[in-house]
Length: 99
Image: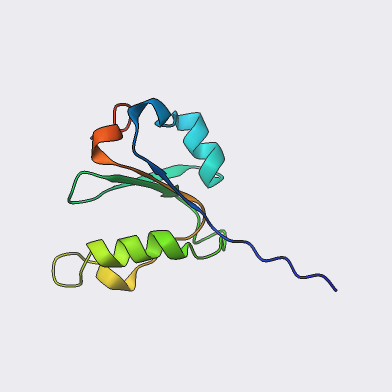
């Protein structure tokens, strides 16, 4: 019996020329997108229904989340996690996704 292991990826965008369109972001995360603004201005795009769909844990994005959002200043804090493919758009690379 073969075993398939899915590994969620984190794509980091640091050049505005590489910033994804909505359709490209939806294709990468595999569905509707949800955006999370980070305190430093970076923007994380994830699958809005990823947890409901049972997508695999994204270890890189979850570490980034836990390093950024603490329990003292944010509701979910370090207890939350990221699943599925995710895109991190650095602050200086945002044009379309700028908040």
